[in-house]
Picture (tube, rainbow, N blue to C red):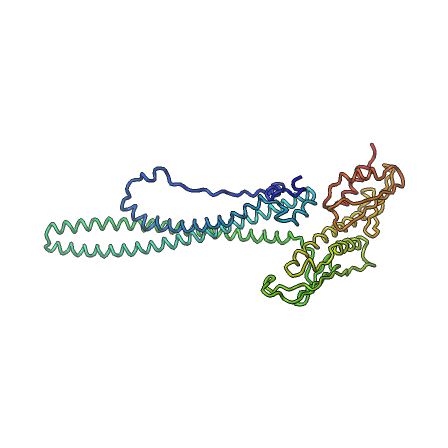
Length: 446
């Protein structure tokens, strides 16, 4: 009911279509309670902190700042779910409120496919972010590894000097001086072993980062292939009913309904400082519609569709006032496409009834101007009557006025009205009317 009245929010509309879009809330990390009570760091801890942990921490902090900025930029979009659908996209609401349950389910399924596509695309962005982060960590580890190599080289030089000193001591220095240099040698040897252990640890980290980098690249390639498949699906899901047959600086010509309607837009002078796409925006001098349908050869259903479409075009008044510049042209094409799409479906329904009407005890389907005459006849219910429905360009979003001419039996306007009141508006409205009349009035009374 909220959906029909236009007071449904975007989030409730998604829930109605069974499209669930969870929005994760940020989680903050906290230091452990015993963090401040840790024991004093050892020299080994200080070396690891200087060459491993601090460079990593600096890179992670930069990455967190970038992610926090992205979160702040995306927060306003989450609030759209609490806004009314009619305020966010009125055209979508007007179209969807006339849809049947099956159409809503189909539209919800398509939205879920689109959600799946954008979820996978967000994963690709996240994996790309990880590649950037791991690349920075890898570069930082290589720089620290080079610093350690330089420090090891300096220590080697000190050891060489210590060796020369020991040789001199063996030649005659005092025992005390020899003892001091020996202690220095032992200290430097321990320092060298520590640095080599750090080098081995960094080598293992580099190997692990390279492995993770290969895995991420493989995942990105897989998701890119999936993205291409989803993009093809999105291109197939298109409501456009027009094609461009000409576009120049003077005019643009669009064709609708299998090239049977031509829409010509004549351009005026460019507007200073305003652009349309990559080109200067132009004023629109005139807009005209022309029917290219061969009235003599075209079937009655095609003529009816043409009349209804031009009925809509004439009811809109001056199109140039609605579309003074190129900025308004996409909305005009969209509005016309909606009417063309509905009328085209109506023509298909009429052709279906002409071909398969016998299944519904429909003896004849005829068209007079914008009226459809349906002649029902059945011996089972001992009834024969003609139902005349008056069509308009807003089909199937409004009930159809009708008249009934009974020829045999007792079926009249009261019985027909009772059946029509049970048929919901929306897709294939005419076919569902015929089917319900057949089911309720023309079956065996038993």
